[in-house]
Each structure stands twice: as C-alpha cells, then as structure tokens.
Length: 227
Length: 227
DNA sequence: AGTGATAACTTATCAGTGTTATGTTATCTG
DNA sequence: CAGATAACATAACACTGATAAGTTATCACT
Image (spheres, rainbow over the protein chains, first blue to last red):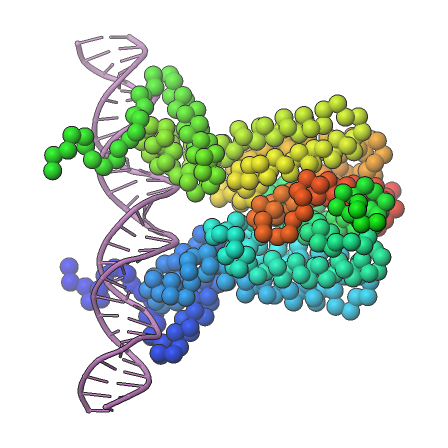
C-alpha cells in the first residue's frame, strides 16, 4: 500500500506562512476565499470553515486567529459586499432634486440590490445573530449605515413638507420595513404570484409616500402630542 | 468497572412499539416532542433529530419513518402552530363591518402573532427551503392560506370602493409585505430604535391604506392598461 | 553566526449534526 | 404455532464548528 504522496487531507495549494509582523495578511485571504465560495455556490452552507481554510491554503483553526467564529467571518464578508449598497443607493439618486424622487429611486435600488445578492441579503437582514445584543449590533454596521442614510433622506422630505414634522425615526423605520418586506418575501417565497419586481417596488413606495402625505390630520399615536 | 445499568446512551423513557396498524401514532408523538423542544428553547437549533427522538422515546432513524427530513418535520410542527394564526386573524376582525377596519385589525393581529412566536415565524417566513420550488410550495400551506384570506379581505375593500378595481393580487402582496417587513425586521434587528410595536403596526397599515386610496389617478404601471 | 523568544501557524481531537444501510423484534394472519 | 411483515433499533458514514496542545519559521539581539 505504498503511495508516493501521503494520503488523506490533500491540500491543493499550501500557503507559505506570513512574516512576523504580517499576520493580518491571512485575514484578507480568508475573506477572499469565503467570498469566493459564497459567490460561486450562492449558499451559506457551502461556506464551511474547512472549505474556506482549504481554499485559502491553510489549516482549519487558522481561521480562528482572525475571526471569533464562523458567523463573524461570514458577516465580515457580507459587510464588504454591502459597502457597494451604500454606493448604489447614492448613485441611484444622484442629480435628483425632488427628495421624494430620491426616496423612490433609493428604495428601488435597495430592493434590486437585495434580489441580485439574495444569499448575502438573507445572511445580513433575515437571520438572527447567535451573539448577544451588544455584539450583534457591533457585527452589523450595515444596518446602522443604511438606516442613517435613510434617516437623512426622510428629513429632507420633511423639510420639503412631504412628510409631517416630528420624529423621523418611525417614518424611516416604516419605509425600511416596506422595502425589506418586499425583498425578503420575494427571496423566501419566490413561488408566490409576484408581479414584475421593479414596477411593484415602485408601486409600494408610491403607496407609502402617498399614505404618509395625508397623515398629518389622521389620528397618529406617535405624533399626537406634538402639535 | 461493573456498573449496574449499562452506560452510554441512557434513553430516559423507552417507548413501547405501536401495534401493527397504528404506525402513524408515532408521528403524533414526534410532532409533540419537537414542538415541546421548540417551545421550551425557542431555538430551531435545539430541535435536533436526536433530541426529538430521545424526547419521544425512540431511536434516531425512527423519525425518518414519518418525515422525509428534518425540514419537513419542523415545518409540520410550525404548520400546526400557525393554524392558530388563521383563527386569530378571524377573531381579530369578527363583528367588524368596515372592511378597512378588518384589514387593520388583521394586520395588527398578524404582526402580534409573529412577535409572540418569533422562532416559529422565522422558520416559516424568513428561511428559504432546501427543497425544490414545487416541494417547497407543498410544504408551505401556511403562506397560501394566509394569502388567500388576505386576498378575500382586499376584494371586499375593492367592492367597498376603498381600493381601486383591478387585480387584487399585487395589492394583497403589497399589504402582506408591509406586515411581514415590520415583523421580520423587529425579530432580526431588535436593537434598532423601534417605537411601540402595536401602535407602529397601526401606523404602517394606516399609511398603506391611505396611500392605496389615492392611487386611482396616479401613474400605476400595473393597472395602466385597464382603463 | 548563533541563540532564545515568539508570531504564525498545524495536528489531533472533541462533541455534535443529518442521514442511511442493515439488522432485529414484536405483532398479526393463517 | 409457523411465516410474513410492520415497526422499530444498531451501527456507521460523512460531515460540521470549535479548541487544546504541539510545532516551526522568522525575528531581534548578542
């Protein structure tokens, strides 16, 4: 049973260890490997610690030198991908004067982005974290970034008199819920009779805006005491 | 090393095997065991095949006599729980004449139900199936049931002149997206600055309704060719 | 150039998972 | 009471995330 090469765990390409100060180089290569697997397969399940380690050319526990656990690693991958989301949302509304049009275009861009990367979106926005609340928040800069930008857009709408004055937070959360609800339901229940996605997103956001604009006089519990 | 009882896999309560025609009795006990673990722990991860088998007092592969795989088992558990959802939605709108009020109360009841059973809701509405589209649809009677009821409510709203005439499907899907977006985002991102849940749900649904009511004259691509 | 310190890893292993092929036993039928 | 078979159990496979403990290459310093 003599075989030339040792049997068992055949690592395809064995990485050379980094120099002494350059330990963080591996972090980049791990992220690239994990991102590659996720992009190739489109499934989080395929991104196992072992698969990532093999693709990066290192041993399995080497991953844990740079990431606390698997969730942190995958979240880091998704965070990098979703940096594009921020840029896309800006691009979608660049050069637009009407703040309502800004809101609409950003909303459509949001849904479109989610449907282009359904697995990334699912990981970040449809999966509860295994960590505590505090660390889950720390691992999730995407949500806060998206929300801050949306908040600014809502405020400009309020300044233009489109939305009623008062706390912008519930309005922004409401608009976010609409866009998220649409994207996430399409991802999970694709067999439902969804109309054309972009026109439907347009419809929903219009619906939300028009609803909001009439809201001043209605019985709005969260704003009742303001006026 | 003589010990009285055999070491190793100590099954707490060994079930007596069912009689010859009564093989399906085990199915009920498996469902109860799985539902119990899910209710106790609140985590799908705790509902492992082995844990369920031990709780039911049978061996691990016995599960596979009644369920194709783990997903089917857990979906069966959730389907039973969500039968209550249907009843709750009916109760919430019982005795109401105004179809809009029916819509609002059902929407609030929907979100409330989701937040009372976040893990069940997550499994059914926030997790993509491992199966093919066809079998995923077959495993998911909840969505279709909920949607059919919502569709009926939307139609009654259309008859009352609250919503514009035409295809009810996109309107119902839109309303569902709103309620789902709210519930699912709260479940996954509880650290966001959510206002009081029920009043917020009320706000959102009002917002959706008021938007819809003004829609007839606006540029609505999905209805443009009707008039 | 040689030596010790240590950053950057690897080896080996643990405890668990879903799933399946195969073996066994209790019950029912004739 | 013998044979058929429904209703299980045993054992094992191929994974998974994670960790304790051991190793090796590189660096600073003499």
